[in-house]
Image (tube, rainbow, N blue to C red):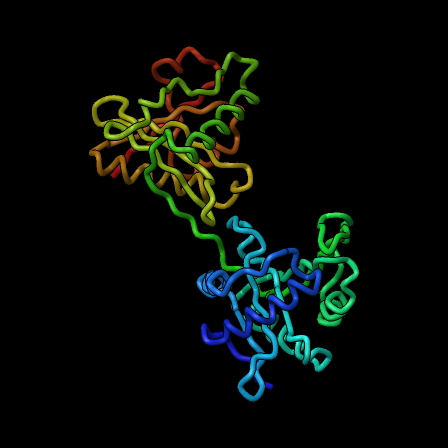
Length: 325
């Protein structure tokens, strides 16, 4: 017996094996067999996603198949996969399923997946539950009454096995200009507003920083969004204040991303944009209760100055300036 990656030429046999199990078993909760074209589309989706799709072959005949697929489509699940496995009815109890699943585990581990889940239709599927348990899966859930097939209610078993354990690479930080009206930007600005209200609402702070959406838009201004590991993690804006001087506004880092250098990187990127616009200095205002923000500005070379403009009348405002170039 040889285990190898499936090819389109295997799909007639794969289709036949799946159809048999659909009609006779409770591992799949489909009622009508998909046609050959639908099976081909499912195969292509698995392969296009970078997941293994394997067959067990002997004397030129496919005896069974297995594949991994995304457990859920959202990106946060990208290191978790789900296995599926089917063996022809006339060759069962020959160790084919075990050999297939063992190879699938190895290949999924090799491509960096970190968890494999088995979603087993029918809580009474002792053979599948036993196979997965023998290969290191542990029971996580056994939920009754989720399905209906063969005129009876079916339970649903979830089993889990860890795969790769090597540390993940550090998350990549990407900072780019973005329309402040975008969904991500609005969510970040909402987070900043809520945080400022919680800090200084008792002082009359409305959390909006005395700026409108138009104040943050190009071409006069630039609004940056930082993404860490492809997730919105922070923002900051630069707008003109007076000839040769720009003002930093709406600096914010999401709580989960703090302590990872996001704020400092956004500030540095804003300084680059300021220099490109010919500014010789940047100014900004923050509050005395924003201790972490004050530390970021001090570390970045900003020095305290008397408060300017509308901030001069606010006893809690703290203003900073940095000469550029």
